Image 1 (cartoon, rainbow, N blue to C red):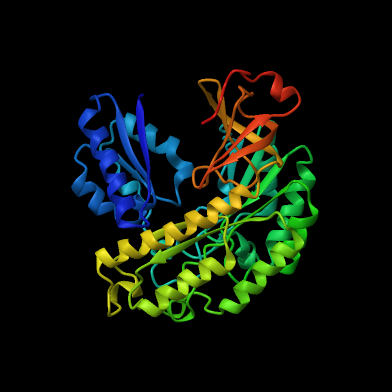
Image 2 (image 1 turned 45 degrees about the horizontal axis):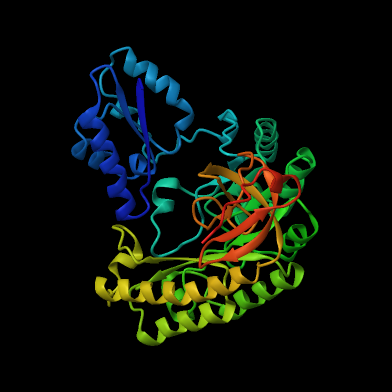
Length: 416
């Protein structure tokens, strides 16, 4: 490689350390003719720390100037020295979304499509607005154009992402803009099999959005709603929507409209001031809703956030114990939800093959964060194939090919 680019994360301390570790490893190994660039959120959030901790770093590129990566590389190759000045600090200059060129990027039939950047939510634990800024929605024509380009590149699945997809268009004077955007994308891409929605903010899941999800066959019956907790007092301190009854009502509406909907959420264990009663409330909430997928993180005190200055910080040992308790509870729930899929025929997007098996995902699984469907057949990577579900464990499903898919399997293969 001539150019080494690490797209860093600045959200949590653990992610920052992982980013810095990757940069330092590359810096130690790089040749004199190679260029090392730190891009993304950590480069935007704390450029001085990167300069100090990564000797050999040649350039920085913040979150708002990624479309200038070629110009930066050209400047570095011209011998203008270490281009640390190219990092845009959070000033008034913002490159507009329509200045960005769509870049089709399909991997194993799947592609992410970012519809907005930045966030207006005031979450007490979150650093994102400090380096991403306020919500900035992409113009719908640019999103639709990129979606069409992704499908032309072979995308079987497009995943709409943002810090809050359900807030899309608010800065463009749109109310409940996501359902209309989904319709526009589907109209332009009638040959797209799957459209997946991620990161829906509690309270922003509208009746119109639920109707669109339920009535448009291309929209996966899957929704990620990061709730962060299940007790109203904890949510109040988090500066999150604390009306738990409203959340329960939304879940009921989703399941009434789509009985097969798969719901994912994330929780934070050990937020400052979390009492035993509040934690028990989280466990009760998890049991009551019975999510298909749950991710749990221990609270990380990020400098500059309101939560970092709160009293009654929870000890690390307690945070880890509480996280483990929620995950143990969710494993039992997840196993039951997976076992309910036995005997069903699911469409599976194949992501890879290994030793006579195919690994893929159904509509119930988002890439990287959810489980897999393990199929006893070698199926075409990047394509969708019918699979009959024959086995289930806590996170993954097992199955066999159906119809033509069954003909490419190994009849002597036994799954244990």
